[in-house]
View 1 (cartoon, rainbow, N blue to C red):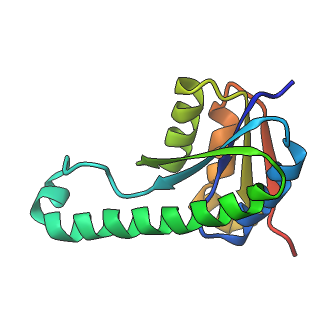
View 2: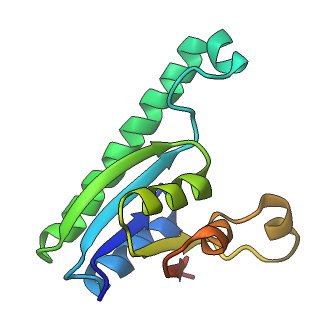
Length: 146
């Protein structure tokens, strides 16, 4: 039985579809909604030290976006009686999703995908594919609706 499910979200249609799938599907599990900010959490790089104010503004915007996404997730889960927690991570998307999963006893991941094919998939890569390759737990991939 799945006890702890991680749902990775951003502001995409695919992420919304993943959340809408997971809430009723895993009604009896603890759901963690994770947003990964692509901006580093601290001023570690030369670029971040040189552009400190700009980087802090990007971090603040990322946190504000995460809070809006979390509020939407809470509204969706409210009516179902599902226990939902939220978390923000900073850095590489697939790395942070997999590391968070390992460090927090998550036993299933739900992630949306844009369903890129062909050359665009090759050039851009895929967060969902990276998670599937690295994850030690089952991963459900929810396609973006047509």
